[in-house]
Structure formats: C-alpha cells, structure tokens
Length: 79
Length: 374
Image (cartoon, rainbow over all chains, first blue to last red; front, top):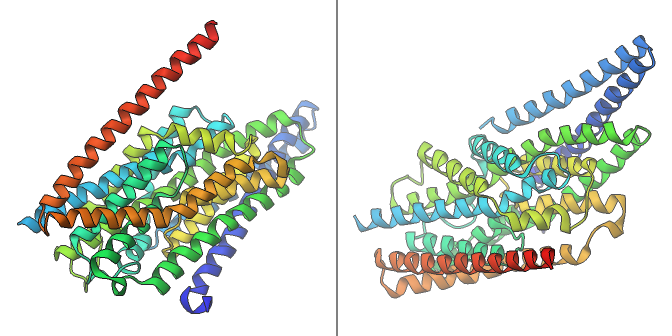
C-alpha cells in the first residue's frame, strides 16, 4: 500500500545517504579532533614524530569532511 | 488587469510568508550554536541569513513538488492560493505568539489544501501521491531519521573522543559547529525558500503568466524568495531559539555538532529528491536524539510533547484557516477586493499582536528589574 503511493527509491536514498553521511562525517570529524589534540600533547612532550603523525591525521580528516560537504552541495545543485 | 493586481497581492503575501518562515523557522537552525556558545547570537543569526540566501539557489526540486504534486495546478485559482497563504501565515503567527516551534512548511501545505478543498473540491487535491507520498510519509520519516542519525553520531563521537581532555574537545566541536550550523542553514534555505517559489509559480500558472506545459521557476521568483527568507532569518525568532536551544535539554558542543550535522544531511538529501520537509521537525528530532542517546532523562519530554502536539495540529489547523480565508475572500466576489480587505485586516491584527507582545515584554522587564533590585 505504502509502496504504491510513495517513491520508495527516493525515500530509501534519503535514509541511506543520511545515515552514511551523517554518522560517517561526524565520526571523521571526531578523528580530526583526536588528531589535533594528540598532536598538541605529543608536541608538548617533545615527540616530534608523533606530533607530525597525529597532525597529519587531523588535517586529512578535516580535508575529508570539507571535501564531502562540497561534494554534497555539488550533488544537490545538479539541477 | 484585475488578475494582475491579484497576482501582485499573492506574490507580496507569499514573500511575507517567506519572511515569517525565516523569522519563525530559521531560529531553530542557530539555536544549538547559541546554546553551546559556539557562536554569539547575532553572529549566528547573520551567518544563517547569508547561508539561507545562498541555499535558495541550490535546487528547484522542492519548488516543482509544491507547484505540481500537492494540488492540481490546472484547477487552482489565484484566490485559493491567496487563501492558503493567509491560512499559513495566520497559523505561523499564532504559534510564534505562543512560542511553539511548529512547521511553517506544513502550515503552507495545510493552508493550500484547505483553501483549494473549499474552492475547487477534493478532485483538485492529490491526496495519495502528493500529500501522503511526498509530504506526510517523509514528514514522519525525517524527524525519526534525524533522531537516529544524531543519536548514533553522538554515541560514536563519545567513543572516539571519550579519553581526550574535555577542553580541546569542546573547542574542537564548537569550531565544527560553524561548519555544521552553516550546512544546516544552507539546507534550510534550500528546502524552505523553494516552497515559496513553488507557491508563487503556482499563482503564475493560475494567472497564465507561466505555461503549465513549460513549467519553470522564473529567476526573479528565486531571487525575491531567497531575499525574503534571509531577511526574515536576520530579524530572528528569539522565543523559539530559547525553546530549541535550552528548554528541550542542555547540550554540550559535541551534541550540538551531531544534531546540526544530522539535521543538515537529512534535509539536504530530502531536498535532492524534492521532499518538502519541515526543518523544524527535523532539527527537533536531531536535538532530541542527541540528548536521548546520552541520557533519556536529559530530555525535557514535556517540552518535546508540546512540540509534537504543535506538529500534529499544524496541517489541520492551517487547512481550517486557509479554508476560512478563502471563504471570507469570496464574500467580496472573485476580484481584488477580497484579498485587499483580508490583507488590511491581517495587517491590523498583526500590528495589535506585536503591540501586545511588546507591552508584555515591557511588563516582564519591569518585573525582572524589581526582582533584581528588590
């Protein structure tokens, strides 16, 4: 009954995109915070290699979040 | 000539609705940023206004749904569109007056359906494919989805950052809220401004200005709708900010980030496929989800219950006001006299409400001052 009145393809697309993008990007941003926080701590302790590694992790994670956001907007504006 | 005058009145009324939509709805978008102190209130509202404006240019799928799929554009008259708009504005003003975060989108759809039902009969309304399939079912799914996404996100986040020192984590998420709040404002502009575009285009089709066979949203409609919602956003809706930002539950910056992110992705994904969602419902679901995942008792369920009550009442109440407005308009015939009289009466009532609200604020301020000094 419901399948005949609602476009299930569109509805399912909204559901899976929301779950993957919502939870995924939030988790990646969490990783960015971990990277930044650990990089600062490692730098204070004089562990340069650790600071660089965690710093790189933070930067990559932030880049992923920003790139995914831009991709989302691009996809939406594809009229 | 008289048809053109009615079109001008309908467009002005639609833009007024768009302004009240920004005023009434978009405050929800910035409430979490303000609540967690990620942004100062005025900065957050200004930022949301700019991104609402930008968001209105992203897509036209929702406008097409409003103009084509809810009511039959071939059967709709300009007076019915006018009645629907005034019904929606009336319900928005009532809920604003009482501080209830109800949905402007559902008020608009309810108002249109009520007015068209009285004007043209049930055959002019697409109940199954349009209202049920593109409005009601997505309206039920979206807040639940936002609730789940925000809830799962916050649990995942706490797992990831749980062992870190709280201070940098708080700072990090407040920074993240600039991005997530911006995305939410963009999403709101995309979904909500398009509803006004859809209604104006419907009026233009009814007047014969836009051909039904060559459906398109004129550029001036996009620009004026974007401007009206952005101005409404900047004017702000402080009572609703208070309800959304702190009265449902006190949130930390991680919860604010998760709630805004969840709300933004749900609204953007729905906008892509043309579902006219309520941003109020969606962000409310996300805010409640981010609180409930941490601790069920953190949510003030009484406030959440009032919000749900406002949701349930919005469609039928706005439909009644839309039907009533159309009926009153028709007392004056099919010309421009009815809309002019209704607009004049509406402006007087709105002015009285604003004066009364200002007087109540004045009394409250005197009371607060007496409490402080006493």
